[in-house]
Image (cartoon, rainbow, N blue to C red; front, side, top):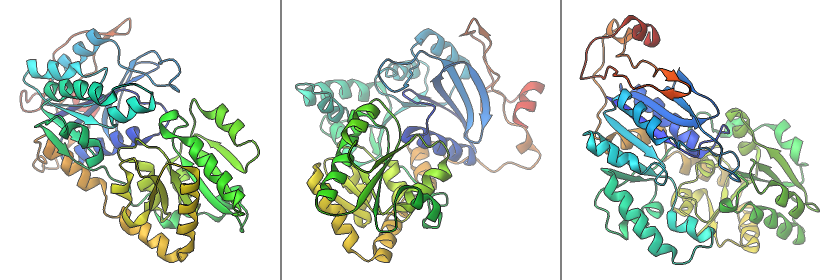
Length: 415
C-alpha cells in the first residue's frame, strides 16, 4: 500500500525528526509498501531515495526558528494529496497540518498523527499560562481528527491519556546499532577537543530554548569549580548560539556547529566520556539513544521522557547545573568498561526493525507478500505532479491495489 507521510519543521540539518522519517521510510519500503514523504524546502524537488519517494514543496522559512519551514499552501497540498491517492497518511505535525486528518476522512483514507513533542511541555517553555487546559483542548481536537495517535513514550502519551483519547498507541523509536557503535570511538576526534587528563562532555542537539543548552554550559562551570577538568563540545546550531558563546566565554566550551555526516556524529558520541541531554520536554531523545549505542553514558533531565529510555545507561536528575555535575561525577566513579557496557546494553533494546513493525501495525498495514524476481523490477507508478509556476496541477495517478497498469515512464522510474 501507499503510505504518504507529511512533515513540517524539518530542516536541511540532520535531526531527530529527519532521522526518524528516514528510518521509517526505509522500513516501509523493505516491508513491501510504497513510502512517499512530503516536506517543505527551498525549491520543488521529486526524487527516489532509499526511504522511498521524497517530494519537497517550495516553502518560506519561519522567522526566528533556525531555518524551519512549513507546508503552508493548503490548496497546493490538497492537489498533491489527491493526485497521490494514498492508502494511508502519516502526519508528523499536529499544528499546521492537523486539517489533513479531516481531508483523509472525507476520502476514506486512514490517518495517523505522530506526536513528536509534548504540547503542554512546550507551552510551559514558552511561558504560557493555563498550559494544561490549552493543551487538553488542542489535543482533544487532534485526537478527533485522526484515526490513530502515535506517541513514542509514556511521557508523550500522558497528555492524550489525560483527555481519554481512545485511539492512542505507543510505539518507541529506534537506533541504528551498526552506525552507532562503541567501535566508532576515534582517538583523533577525542584529541581534537580534550587532553588525555580532561573529561570530555558532549551536547548534541539544536541550540534552542526548548533544549536548554545553557544547562550544559553551566554543568561544565560547576564541574570546573569543583576542580574537575571537564570540557564541553556543543554539536549543533540554532538561535541560542550567540548567547551560549557569551555564557561560555571563560570556559572550555567548543562549538562544533552542525555536523552533517552521521559517521562523524557517531565518532564524536563514541569518543565522549558523558553525553548531556538537559532538555525538559524531550519525548524520546534519539541522540541520547545514539550516544548509549556508542557505549557512552548519558545524564538526562528527569522532567523529560528520557528516564524511560535511559535505564541503566545513564542517570536522570533534576534540571540544575549542580545536579548534572554530580551525576557526571557519579558516572565517572563507575569502572569504564562497566558504564560503557551498560549504555550499549540499554540501547540494544531499541532497534529500527521493531519500531517499523510497530508503526505498520498502527497503520493496520502488514508486510506485503514477496514478489517474484521479474515482477520486483517494476512497481506501480506514481508520476511526478505537473508544476505550473510552482503550483502542482491536479492529475490522477495509479495506486497499488486500484490499478494494475504501469506506463513506460513509471516503469523506468522504479526499475
